[in-house]
Image 1 (cartoon, rainbow, N blue to C red):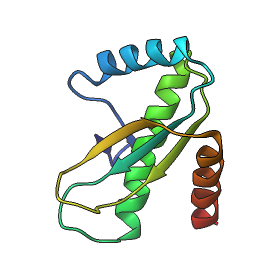
Image 2: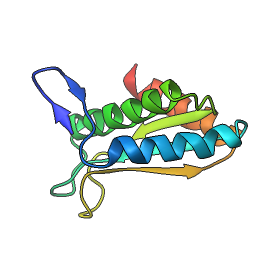
Image 3: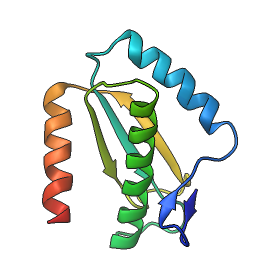
Image 4: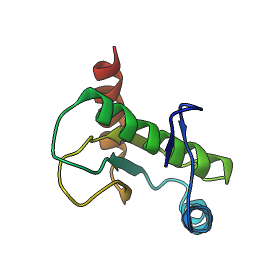
Length: 111
C-alpha cells in the first residue's frame, strides 16, 4: 500500500508473513535470480506516475526480502497499469541475464 504522506509503500494483511516464507525459500537457493514486477490497479494506462508507484512497490518488496536475509540477484520493475487485475506484486524465477537486462532497462527509463 502506498502512503503518500511518507512517500513510501507499506505492507498490509498477510504480506509480512508471506515475505517471511518467500525469504526462507530464497535463502535455500541463494543463487536463484528473481524478477519482481509491480502493477497498479485501475484503468489501463501508461501514466509515468503509475509506473513510478508500481516500481516503488517492487523496490519495497526487494528491500524487505534482503532484510530477511534473501540476497538473491533480484530485478525490480514497475509495470504501471497494464491490465485490470488490480494492484499487486508478482515474483518469479528468471535468469541472471534477465536480472541485468531488467535493471538496465529501469535505470535507463529513470535517467
